Image (cartoon, rainbow, N blue to C red):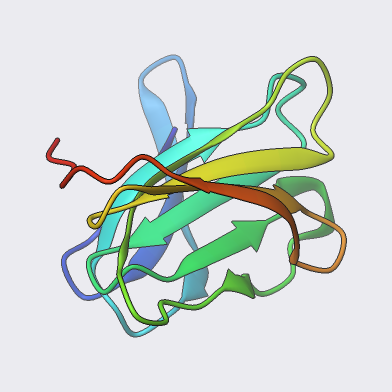
Length: 119
């Protein structure tokens, strides 16, 4: 079970029967608004309240890596494009939809739908 705390800490709870073990996986110093697993569960997207997107690979137990940084408009949401886990799509509050390559954070395409987006 993965979850985040208000302070921007990603936790992992390993639960087996009535026993559990808690581990701190990453601390990104920004409140996390959503966690999204890739379809094959190898990558976890972390979207912050400030609109920054990080990737975390549970099998590698490393730090979260900043993938996308909020520029002119905060990222409101992000998710994986399936099948696979090479690409993600994001939407900003201003209505810009973008497709990203997860390896290096390259923006592959974008479309402005010219409408303010709310969740």
